[in-house]
Image (cartoon, rainbow, N blue to C red; front, top):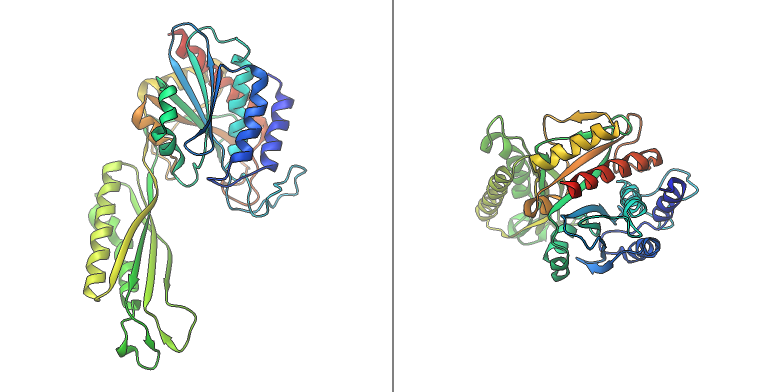
Length: 378
């Protein structure tokens, strides 16, 4: 591989950061870069601006999909970098630019006819940050042209030693979804609140009631959270008693059945409180991420590959509390999501000062290469 070239490619992707559902230039940049490795096919606009790059050996063997993400975050790029994002308020603060560089490095290893068996699929997925991209890719009729036998992905993880591989059987990353309830009553003059129907009391009951759901409706061993992330009543109008209110929460759980249970409880509670206060209401769930559940055989492949590459291994005891829409792929195909340590002193993901460490591009490529070799040799 040409590591210097891949680092420069990562910096170029960082400069051109684009939000979910807007990654057209990023996809074009990747496609142009990979053309030099003579892929068998490039499938564009899958699930949005997604890109699937296929290297077909022409010989029987498994179809192995390696996935990375195209999208950036609505977070300013605060470090004074020579490759700073050109889009104000938009930057790669989750490391998707680095993930793309790692996956593109596999074209160095297996492109230009170097693949002996099977098919390698490099998938550059759109809209991971909103939890919509993976489901859209799978639902796209173009995905029928891919149909992988196995799926793998990694995510860089600050707080773990650089180059460390983090694995876990079963649930690796938690399920999550956004919950929104909108309440409608009636405004009135602030001097005559009795002539209207303010949702203020209902909002206060919702905030306390929703927050308490994990305590009363999950067992001690069932990890779950309901986090209130936003609430609002009315407008800044001191002469008006409010007529509308909104409460938003993020629901999280390690297991999908627990997620489904607390989501139902949130809906039931919200409907009962709205009805008790004679308010019209609308409930919506958004940005739904399933739990990412790893296949044990695929986790073993990752562990064996880390050992073969001489990379230190951390076996995780509990799932990560954050979510990843790669769970849509592992629900449909055997596969595994694993972590790649970004360093103990690297800023946390989604922090304005975070920047993907170029030093982990090389170990990321190495372990993916070994995983692919193990899959196609079996």
